[in-house]
Image 1: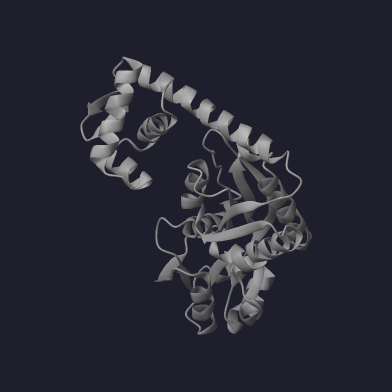
Image 2: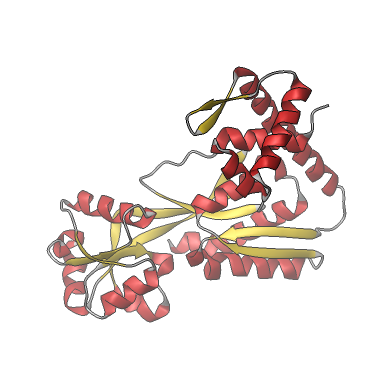
Length: 301
C-alpha cells in the first residue's frame, strides 16, 4: 500500500512544480522531498515526474496517482469527521483564518460564541488574506477561512473545497468635507478630476477602484499609495484625496467620511472549507456560528 505522506508530497509537487516550494510547504529539506518521491516511484514501479527547465512536471502515471490521492485524502478526512460526529460534544482545536477587516466584525464574535457554547473546543485565529488562507485550508493547515471576492471577479476554488456566501460588503467612496456633498449628488464622476488614494498595483482593492471608475466613465489619477484602509481614511481626512474602500473597513472614527456607495460594487464575504470536513462537529458548529453572526450584517448591507 502506498504511503499517504509520499502521495501528498507528489500532489503538492504537481501544484507547486519545484522541490524547493514543496520543501518549504512541509518544513523539510529538498533532499528529503526528493528521497521520498524516489521511494514512491520504486513503490509504484513507474516514473512519476520529468524535468522541464527549472520545474518538474508529472508523467501520465504521476497525474493518475495525484488524481487518486485527492480522493484518498478526502476519504480519510470524511472518515475522521464521521467518527468525530459520533461524540456527544464538540471538542478539540478549530483553526479559523480571517482577513484583517473581518476580525472584529466576524471572527472574534464567532470565536467568542463557540467558546461559550462548546467549552471543550479551543479556537485558534490566524490573520491571513484569502490568497494565502484558501491554500492553507486545502493543505489542512487551517479548518476554515473567512474570505472575500469582489463582485465583478469570479473565483475558482481548488478541487475539494467549498465556499458559502455570508453577506455583501458594499464599496463606499470616502471624501473630504468639500467633496462629499458633490459626490453624494453625482456619484464617482463628481470626483473624477481630484487626487485618488489607492493600494499598490496588484492588490485586489486597486482592481476594485479601477473597475468602479471605469464604470463611471473615467480613469482615476492615483497620486498616493497606501497598504491599509485605515491609512487611506486618515489620508482622506487630511485632505489628500478620495478613496474607495469596503464599508466593513470603515471605523466609527471615519464614518463621517463616507460620501456615497459605489454602484454595483461590493466584496462578497464567505467562508471556505474542505468538503470532506463538513461533518466534523467543530467545523459544522463554526459554520452555524458564522451564519448567526453574519445575519445582521447581511441585513445591514
